[in-house]
Length: 336
Image (cartoon, rainbow, N blue to C red; front, side, top):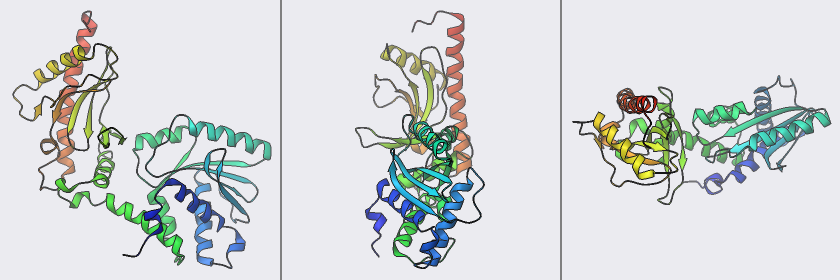
């Protein structure tokens, strides 16, 4: 197999460098070195600008770089537009970084008579729910598939360019194989692909959870607010877990009560069981459905429609528990 630079340099800093490098190729003076690469770079720059403004008909000047006021990638285009890019692979945005970047860039643009364009560029995968949060903070979203569409637009023969494009295409292909793989063979990309397919059919907010066991791809399916805590359902890259969250006191008392009520609704069912062990933390599992019962047998291929139907059925059980607890809270002084 031919070595690929970006299979070795997998971090966001390497991707930042490629994006800044590609934007530089949009400058007209670069046409004489590689016309196809320069043409693709112009399309890339124009596409990013078009996400929030009417792009210029011609790109006459591009200055780009990295780490301006902690902004991953920036570009000044035609002496008129400031493009700022928050570049992510699998890491998500944190705290209020997008708001801070946009606030600083907007002040700079007002002072220098520039027009601002803010882009959240994601070459990994991310839940639509999280992407919508980026949009609310004033950033347009540009995903891996959008990037591949641009990279495939010209017959560029530059090796750095080809390595990056092949790396992205490989990531895309990995996440599209889960429908053709036995469930027992699924790994991280398959679960990400599955979650993306699932969120087209029902609500799901998914992300990577890093823990002392090595972490997993998690998908929250609902969130029900009650007086004492929030019962919810969560897929933990395998088991489907019924949980209660944000519990800060009387952990075991509350956990046991919710477990007892939920299991009473599930009496006679062999697919819902007690957890292997009860925790006593902020987020606690009160019941579990093993993967083979909700997703499918080990050697089978996933059937999305059947999976969605099963998840909706389990959600109804969860809702019945929430309804009972809500009635208790409304009619009596809840002991917890």
